[in-house]
Image 1 (cartoon, rainbow, N blue to C red):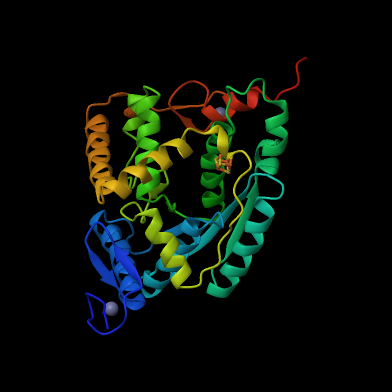
Image 2: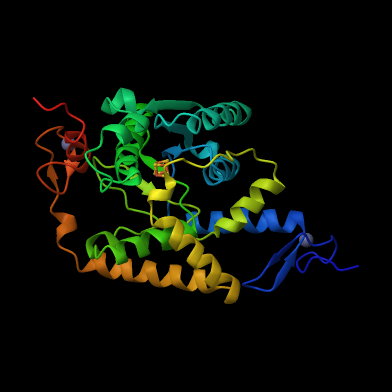
Length: 310
Ligand code: SF4
Ligand SMILES: [Zn+2]
Ligand SMILES: [Zn+2]
């Protein structure tokens, strides 16, 4: 009988193409737990006394992240975890995930806070899609900008100083390529697994940044973590899906190519940050008073589109 390459005992259930390993269920799960722990240590993501708000959408990545952090974080060292969920107001899509997140958090004993675009910005996504001035203002631009702000506000409300998001290795390369194709070199410098502690700012960490999306799905299935299956009805407007399919095709033909491109993207991103003066020039939004790079922040700029004409 063929056996796992790690323990030489159990039958393999997973073939890790980029390393050639065949792993049994237990060794596969342990390999992901260890990988995430290594990423946390490598970037000194979490320290004694931190309160980590985990952005939990109900998708596989965020529930896997919550589950691993809840298991590996040592509460005896004064580290606290809270889950935060943002309701974008996308009917038929968000409803399913809110139920999954609530049940999963109760099972883990992690407190959950839910905030909605409607209560924070006065407009939910379904409405925004109807009243936006043109399709040039894409669904994911509106939604992504609102979500980043909503997560910040939710984390402030629960008293967190660190925000953990579930961006995986695939997400990171896709984002890098989106910015590359958009000619946005400044944003190419935003790709980092962890920001540093700064007074008055939330530290942002991505403990799954070194992990393939495919392996997160398999981990969720092996651990029977429930996750949302429904896809967002507005996702087709993004070039992200085309890049995702392109990268998956490349990875199939050349195992490990995603990991190499992730490393290149991280290195280029660090170079851009190092040579970028704009990052340090931060200001205050004239409209809402929050931290921003220009006079008016991106959230307020988007909201301008939804104001009735007087
Ligand atoms: S796919 Fe785009 S519109 Fe849909 S939830 Fe994600 S960011 Fe929002
Ligand atoms: Zn094994
Ligand atoms: Zn503003």
